[in-house]
Image (tube, each protein chain N blue to C red):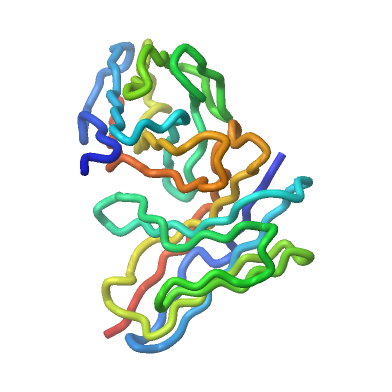
Length: 114
Length: 116
């Protein structure tokens, strides 16, 4: 019963470094997404995917890239980290197009950019 | 664009009492879902309750129930017999079910404190 697995749980980066946040799900969900959570804000959508090979931008996509080569994996790449990207990142997955719309979340990654 | 507003940044309740968390939203769509998520200090996002907009009956899950007023665009969460384990951030969220590609729109959250 792994659900949605995110790695790492914590990360400190220096400004300008790049890294990839990993997300994997084992529920055969078509829809996967990345959110960021900042203090005093709700979660905001960064990027999403409705299936392998299909991705699109959410509300706050700048500075992030995604790809979806398999149904299971949806990595989030920070190309050149900035202090403004200090946040908690959540990956989520759900069925697509079904009436059951519950999103399952990973445990989050706390990222600090110094 | 959709918006979700939680007007109570923090609420406090005595253990075993009842508390209601408020949520209002705005959407031009007629078919959507509404959710309440709980986020304890562990950071895990836990689904508390879900409401389909086309259903008139209010959803209930054990001690958790909602008051869904579609015309008023209001979706409040009532927690009965509050327990210490209910202490957490609570987020109201909306999902347009016409495609869902826009993902969930979240409110800013309400920090619920349970006084022993």
